[in-house]
Length: 171
Image (cartoon, rainbow, N blue to C red):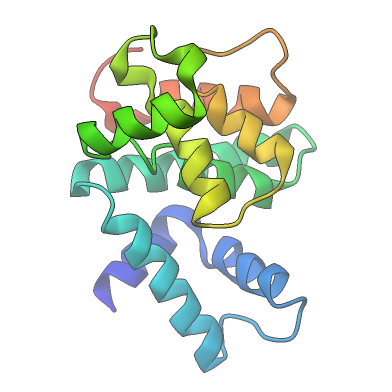
């Protein structure tokens, strides 16, 4: 469970516990075998979609977004989820990304390919993770280019992504 302990150091056991409790309508928490297994499956699923460097960035952004949300009176769980999911499609194979962009986001095909993941991550959140919270989805959708209609959650995610100390450069 070494990687699990490292994950808790980065984002905190409270965020994972709150996620399990919300998912199960407070029937179980992280101390149950289901809660523990659920957390491991979610983390592994996300980890397997990206290289280790991006996974560490994702954990860092999740933690930072959660902290920004707490400081600004926003639900920290929403911040944590948005941070964990913001780059979930960043390393999607090009052919798959292009196919999905054509099908669901054709109006954005003229945008630079490195930012396609903001729309594709929203798609993955909705279709694979069944996230339906529009504020979280919109924050993910705006995390690279921003927008004039960003919520405070969106601004927290945008800033956390740009200020992540693991990026290795001044943004």
